[in-house]
Length: 279
Ligand code: ATR
Image 1: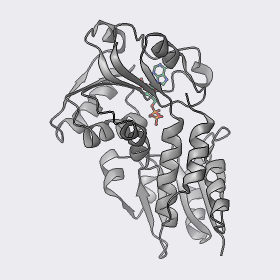
Image 2 (image 1 turned 90 degrees about the horizontal axis):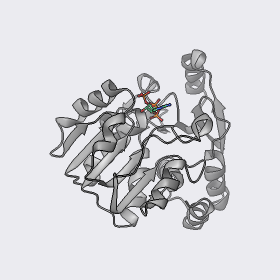
Image 3 (image 1 turned 120 degrees about the vertical axis):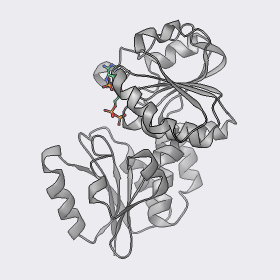
């Protein structure tokens, strides 16, 4: 029987996930299809109940704004999803159980590992759902000495600091967005996890980078559309290395694919996709 997969979110018009997964399914001749399921927030519970009753589904990706809202509907969470508190991948087992995973963590880490980058000091801009996955990734995969979080709403940065401080040796500090430019020592890694730089906010950048960039700094913007945000443009002008969110999108998709199908994402498709939108 053909298995169906989908990304669930709202709105979804710009999602690249169907293209990524359908290319892999057809390369491997798998009887599977991936589609977009836009669900309005006010009918989320009803629609999830309907999807649970239909055994054609093999799994889902979950995106904004449902990465936390999906959790009460799941039968179990893997270790990473539990620690992060957000789910971007649902695996449906042969017995019809819904298991939550978070492949954003692996997706974020992979491009850093590939370049052999191991940051000691990090600036994390933002304190939303994506920031939680990034902070977990930084603490788990790299033994950073210090991580500074800055966010428009400072209370949310403090909450993130509180949630993770107990489980790490790294120092986590919170600095006001408008005071960060006074932080003159610079960072090895600067990550933007906010939506500042895309869509209606494409002409803005979340922080002024002057003074924050030093030799060998990598500025990593999770945004992939546009391929080069204002933040990345300034980073390049200041001589920093830059990375956009496209490789992370591809690697999180590849990891979801492996969870659903038990098969590695095909390497030629992976490489072709990675080359499509390098920064
Ligand atoms: P995601 O799951 O993508 O992280 P989110 O949880 O809604 O989405 O978080 C969005 C992040 O972008 C937050 O850090 C948010 O800052 P606030 O916590 O202050 O809301 C940040 N963000 C969104 N729009 C912003 C703007 N115009 N200026 C600064 N930060 C903004």
